[in-house]
Length: 511
Image (cartoon, rainbow, N blue to C red; front, side, top):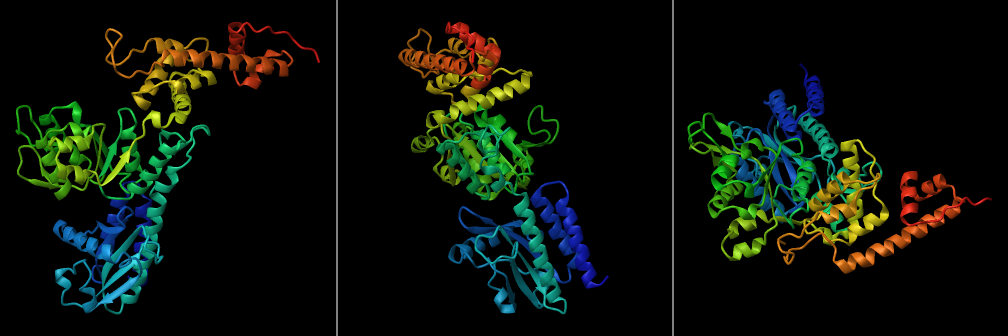
């Protein structure tokens, strides 16, 4: 087969591989293995570097010919080089002989005596420091050298286009509507307040990084949803996203859940079981309520974060994994560090990229949107068309929500199930709520119930406004109730219910 036909065949197979289903990085790794298989005599040690947008450095993401130790050493060299010279590999370059000795990627031992050139090509071919990634390799300095350089340029173009088109960061971040009604900052996170938009911006920034993420915030603020979006907006999006609530199980079970066990490791261990670190390999592991774990477990977790390795329970065999850790807590973790309940070194290891999930108190303007969003989901689930009126939305906005989004969602479900005449029963649902910690009515816990004076001030004002709106619509429609309902955006049944409620005199006005 001629070299030209060989190159064309390789590019055709590359396109097929990239179009296939599966994890993005796994497919690119297969392409690099194919490159070695097709051109082992002329192209060696292909490596994909991916830029970390947070610290502006390049890391080795894929390197089929490097051992784990070689990758670790090369990444340390890359960190040193790119911190001093951020544009060192951000433009196309070819280095021969002695010049190539200054690069961090080692030349394979079987090629030390051969004339080889180090080639660095940005993905997409643009010479700028903000490249998604860089393709590097060693090429034999023979009569096919120029053709092999052209091939790597074409491959870098393919990979650049593939990564930019499959990484969902930019396309998922802003204004992705649900039925043209619900603005989302990222998938599943409804809102348009400055606080929640800032979270969307941060997710966009940290998703492309390999660093650990620490999500902080009150209970019910959607920390796991933020973690899922970080995973979905990253290159690991097609790999597993595995979550575990660390506070829900004992320490022994936690160790077993995360690290797995060998057959016979303990009574009842009848087979080898993989832990969640192994299952999440290549993807993301989300550890919720990390502030609840013991110091002993913290030491084991720190080792995995530092070394990327662990042993199953009952085994001495070391297992290496590539897992991104995302943790969350609602605890005052700094206080736990000061009290020596939480390891300081683990805190700094986890807190590389902190994200604060805002409470509903910090994004009150999103409450009506969230209420309508949950109602839409409930209508779809139950096959109904229950509605909520504007006055009810205003009332929800006046309440305290110590349980945040989770509490609001549960409240809407309760009000939906108690619906009356096609309307959610907000007042009925409020009567079923009790103050947290209250037994004799004097508890000090927060409550979603409004203060009596606030409810007294809010409800009459809303009712007056609603009555005036109905009278205005009836006047505009000349007393025709069907048209008045259309003007108000409610059903005829709902209009008649309010006419009776407010004792509005209706008479048809002749033109």
